[in-house]
Length: 103
Ligand code: HEC
Image 1 (tube, rainbow, N blue to C red):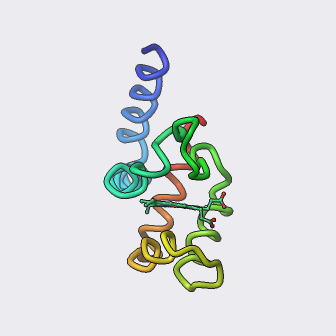
Image 2: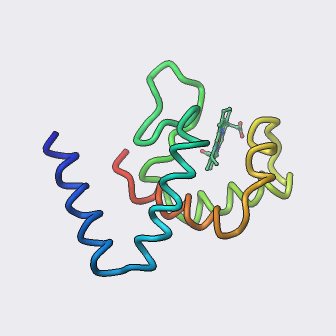
């Protein structure tokens, strides 16, 4: 609960200070919640899930991985499908969002 409060305060503060930054974080968050969280979770996957966790991972790594899935230079039936419909902007927003989550 305390953790939730602190992150809410941080997000609110960010929204007030850096409008554009908060907008992309928000876009990343809604995309992640709508699409990615089904498999990857938001903070972490459930222990029995076979999906790699994304929270707190390096932003550049996440971007690179998503672009590789999109270009099909990294093969995964599931992720090739999902990343295929992401724009560069989506990828930026999502990588930004997940890299800022506490694992
Ligand atoms: C239907 C389930 C599913 C959904 C939805 C899904 N993924 Fe994945 N994701 C996977 C699986 C399975 C893998 C492992 C694939 C592999 O072996 O390369 C994976 C791998 C990844 C990786 C590589 C992680 C690593 O450690 O290298 C990234 C990054 C990733 N997903 C991001 C996303 C993002 C962002 C979204 C939402 C836009 C998303 N995924 C939605 C199933 C899913």
